Length: 325
Image 1: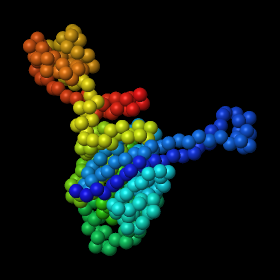
Image 2 (image 1 turned 135 degrees about the vertical axis):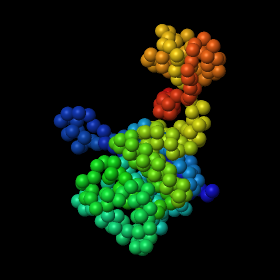
Image 3 (image 1 turned 30 degrees about the horizontal axis):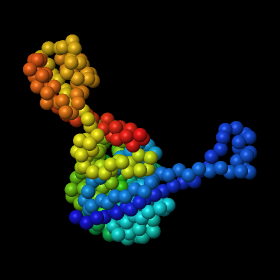
Image 4 (image 1 turned 30 degrees about the vertical axis):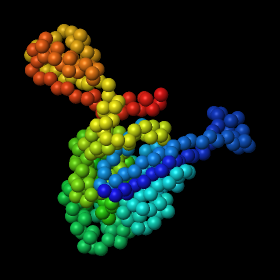
């Protein structure tokens, strides 16, 4: 595989005004303006290979969207370098723009008052697609995303989930080689989130497109991203396989028990996370898992026992906590 995204010490900072509350502070700020520098991204370095699906994780304000905007050419960095498909993104070369797409869950590219198909046709003209290319790609996207009944509707009449499916389709009509997806499932119900995840997975397999995905829904990350990059306060905290992240930051295992009869006290086996009737969830140190499991099977009447890592969102919280420390 070839490297399609190369970032070296990429940084972005903003100078923002600072003033106190009240009329006096407002007047003073007119004469003597105070500012402070906010470092949104701090010297991030990483590379992404063609065809990879990478989860880009971090809390609000971590610098994820800022990084995607620099990689898609919407922002100029204040330091460092980046290469996407061999181009410097912020130069916004037309050949570069034809090969990427940026989907943001909180932004619209469809025109509100006209049918969806007319917005699609506008994109055909912008990207200079032949009618044959356009029809072939539209048919593929309509099939994958089940858009048939939506094409003739004005965008304002679509539900949020329907609109997001159409937004994704509009962003992919030109068959981009790189997808920057910033919270694409934001605000969608569980069923629609699952459909979009399935679509991204199928699109990646069909086309070999590279995907850089940000999401606060850990189900998106677990389903799509073998590799994750975690940033916090603009700094890189982790870059590697999702399984390695779990092993590195998870010091405990979760035991889910289904017993033949309810038990009054299970705390002798570990931390009781929840207990309802004959079903209980325990948390035990990873190094004690085998011993505790053997004791449970020996001392209790067990119908079913499942050993798993803690939920991925808990592990990500631990990463953030260590980063803050």
